[in-house]
Image 1 (tube, helix red, strand yellow):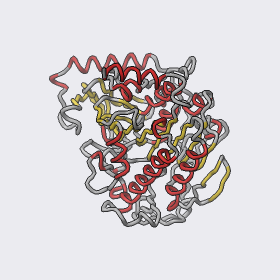
Image 2: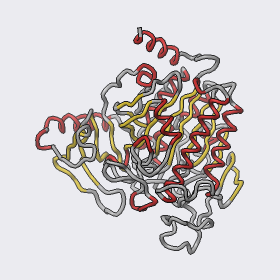
Image 3: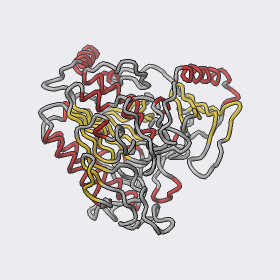
Image 4: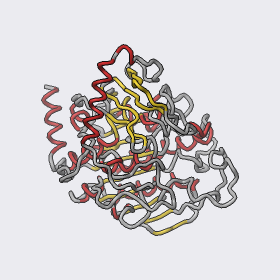
Length: 453
């Protein structure tokens, strides 16, 4: 009987009409949050009661990945459902800078565009970092409304900024001239970074209330905990983990406000909320760099700590509480959103994600598939099942050239998530299988025109 009920629920969710409206979708995307930075992922020093509640009421992923080890390509992949090499949103430069000329190509179909075509109201709140020129900006990529920063909060540093200020526990408030934009127009420059999390949250709550009678998609991309680190007076000095913990605890408060707004407007059962991060923690920033927990390395690397991130799905009454060890990644959110909206996949577009609704709503296992750890335009590693092979390794920062591994390093992530015990000598057959998966993938990839050079 339980199986029949789950199947019926899945069909209801996949249909074009779910209740009075198609399900709402909210993606909360943090910047540089580590795998070990939340209470529900084992942090002993950062208090995250709202995210812990979200995890207890929803589905917490132990093996969820960003599509890249740094922010621009990971954001492009999230919104397009495609490895960033396909859109040209990756290169040795790694991310877009304030003076970069490229951006997310207008030819790419974003999640916002696909959902807007199905009648969804769409909004981007927070950090963008996918281009500042015509064709690449939020409202030209499917968003009706946009409020936030055009790129990272450490860009546009003022002349004479003291060395080390970016990673300081008390960075100067006037150290960066990053603008705050509303629908493409500057409303404040420099942005008061101590108020960003609060103002983003107020904007999100307002959007939810205004669009509660229809279907909406909210892409809520927090600025923090990327350095320079700021928190509002209500949160500064509260955490055992210093200003980094203060910033994360304020994000946790923000999540609570969003969930409460859904309940207040009686739409929580018709709204999927997914919380995750763009990459792992920026460890070279010390106390302002977060934690990858038991995982190796952090931001900028293709070791687990650089790309395995928190992943929590919440939809009360629809998603049963639990923990899953199924491998999933940010590119899966695009086809999942399409399924919820009853929208077809874009024609002629290769998607690298899969629909997660069978797992989310019926607890069905996902098909085994390879996951490729890109650094720039190169595949450094590949995971298949519990096995991960490294062809190249490089620390996130400070190592000028990668180490080449012939034969590849091999780790069993179920037994060794910290990637300490190379077992390649005992499992040559596994390495061969993974190498074949890489060859198959690469044969089907047509790189997009470089946008970051």
